[in-house]
Image 1 (cartoon, one colour):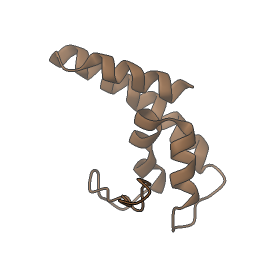
Image 2 (image 1 turned 45 degrees about the horizontal axis):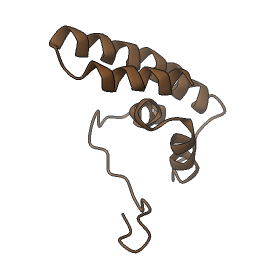
Image 3 (image 1 turned 30 degrees about the vertical axis):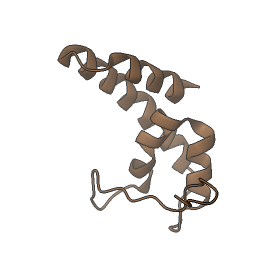
Length: 91
């Protein structure tokens, strides 16, 4: 984060590090931060993406956010946070 402006200058994601669909890197962003933030991060993404990229991000965010909400409920974790993630994913 730039201390002068408060703007994000980079993103390091070590979760689910693997070879595969780059859309996976954006699923949690879509759920946690919403579509506008995710679109801004995707616009700055340095690797090429195909025409179905955004659709896959949206679909996976919806499916995973429901899974995360269920897990939070079962584990007695912060279900309210995950309810908001479901809202973001389906907005």
